[in-house]
Structures are given as structure tokens and as C-alpha cells.
Image (spheres, rainbow, N blue to C red):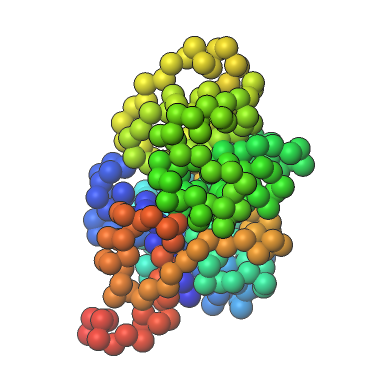
Length: 331
């Protein structure tokens, strides 16, 4: 292990927002490092390769969804990188214990879920691509934005996910519209690549974008009203929910009926789409905006994430952390 990104999901899991957390909990699903050892039958990577591990480390690999490359939707349940139940055969150790994540010195993973990273990819920024990167790339891929057709794509929320969405959609050649409640996000949104910026609480600005968008990616995780975004969609457009909002949405189906628009959800991506995303980011040198911390700064990073206004992804420098003798417990 060289680096591990700190994701807002780490906080959600530890706090029990997504269901009961199993303690002890070792978070981290944005792993980046170098192969130190391989099993005798491993062919995908070799010692010395740069690799990463994302949000899942196992699935049944035999159901319909897994065979179609959607391991994240495994019908028998995928195994998350941390706090997951070891229900399949791809994870070693005590089968009765939960999985532990990337806030660690080393990690062992079955080769299927080990993502080989190109040599020209900055390893210190690679981890968040395996979470935020694939979270935003997958709906772009599924809803046709990687096929060459030019689209107008809205990105709701200009935080850690939203800024990645802006960069990816722009690199794919689309017109990108950033949408935020805060007018203060305009300069940053355009710096990241947005062509236009809309304040969602400004009725005039929202009306000016009516029926102009083919696809909208909604990254908001707080409770909110989705109905205000539906009029922005063109016929056959889709609003994709990506944020883990806790409360159910109350949606009027009338706008959906009269424009044949859709409301959908998306998680992460399977192994193949993740590898595709990594190649794309490597080619175009697309990275999240990161701030490096060592292990002693994790608590502060968690506090900052709760009020993150600049889209920064925090990344733990593992090697630097191991050199901090004042922080490490005595053996």
C-alpha cells in the first residue's frame, strides 16, 4: 500500500448511516499501491506493477449480472472492500470476520478485483478514481455518453463527485452544465470544465435550461427535491441519482409521462468498466483534486469532509504515515 483515499462513504459506514457498522471497522476503498507478491496462478499482474482496489473485492462471478460485467450488482451479493461479509471464495482469512479496508500497510486481494494501473497514472491520485471516478463514469457509459454522440450533460452538486463528473463529461466532448445551490461554485465549476453554471434556487436561470439536457447526474447526498430538475431534461432524457440521500423522494410522474423522461440510479461499475475508466483517465490525465494527509490527519479530514465545499478528495500517504513515530502505537 502506498496511498488510500478517504471517501465520504467511510464516514457514512462508520456512523451507521447505511446500516449497522460491524466493529472493529477499518475503512478505505480507494487503494493504490505496488504488487509485492503474487500467488502461483496469478496472471493479471506481476510483482512491481502499479495496482488499485476499489469498492468491492469479491462477488459470486457466476450469476447473470456478474457474467455481464456488473459485479457490483451480483445477484448473490458482492463483498465490499471493508465491513463486508465474506460470502464467496475470493477472500482469505477467517470467513467469520468482516473485510477490512485500505487504511493499512498492506492488502491482499483476488486478482479479478485488482485493477492494473498504467505507468503514466499518478499513483498518489489514482485511489479516488476507483470510487468517485467510476461512480461518475459508469452512468456516462451506460446512458450513451461514451459512444461519440454529443450531448448536453448536467452535473448537480459541485463537490468531490461533481467535479470528477465535470472533468469526465468535458473530456468526452460534451457540453457540461454545472448545477449548484451556491453561486459561489461558479468559478470553480468553470475552472474544472463546465460550459455553463446554474444556481438551482434561481428560477430564471433554471427556466433558461428547460428541456436542454440529455442526461443529468445528481450527486447530492442530502435530502432534497428532485422534481425541480426534471423540467431540464429533453425528451427521453434521464436523471441519474448517485448520492446516498437517506429519505425517500416524492416524485410527480406527470413530467416523466409528458416528456418520456426517466429517473434512475447508479452505483459504481464492474471490473471491465473500471478498467475502461482508468485507461480513459490515463489517456487524458484526468484526476480528482486531492490533498495529502498522513494517518494522524484522518480525524481532521473526516471533519472537513462533512463541510466540503471545494471538491477536494483527501488521500492518506501510507509510507509517510509509517514514518510518523510519534503517531504510531508502540509495538
